Length: 182
Image (cartoon, rainbow, N blue to C red; front, side):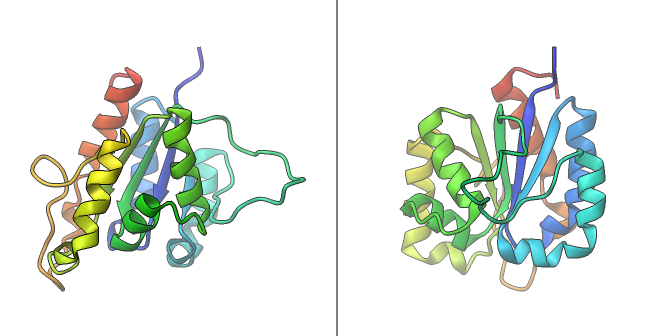
């Protein structure tokens, strides 16, 4: 029996720089991992791309493939989108799929692929009325949104704590939804 496939997606928030460690943790938990990034997150992790590809055995993706190109990843059993920024949460909830990872998670809802999302936003961003609407839209679509008590809780602007980002919560939720032991 092959391990469950986890698509690990990230937006450009400081915890994305911990992706190599998160990939190691996911693999240790029994997942096969494929990494997808927003374009800005891909620029942030440019120097880590060879390591991420070595750790996963798959190319890191941040752009849509050409229609004639074959799929290079196995089918996902679960998607974890963490960290997901204010912008990406809103794009996804509104169905604006100009970024590869947003397109995949939007389609995952329709395909019934379990999807876990954990924002990384500050307390100023969450005051914007669209953010709460977007969170509720995604939750109402079946997305496990790890936001608030027990998940990610916003920090004050400029007071980020990337080292305290609760990766373990996202990984445990991914394991739970696929029935794997974390």
